[in-house]
Length: 121
Image (cartoon, rainbow, N blue to C red; front, side, top):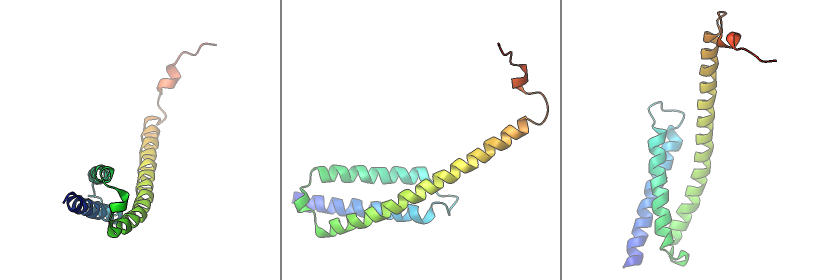
């Protein structure tokens, strides 16, 4: 009975995780309303649940379907990692542009704080 229950729970969590990853892969960088932080929270929760379920499961008892689904998830996670990294790199670039624009606006030819620093020789 425990194997069936655990099997169902693994199937359920794998299904949720796959749905979250597919949604994230589809929407990241395309949907301005997409909440990456919330999606990451859901993804982390599923991965935690899986680690707890697998801790109590003998690998020999894993259904072939789960193993195949895990291989598919691994491929989707590789794509997900690339998309998240590209998104973060874009955020860094925009932040740098804004930082430079603010710096340029502050140094508009008037006095700057650096001019008043006393330098010791």
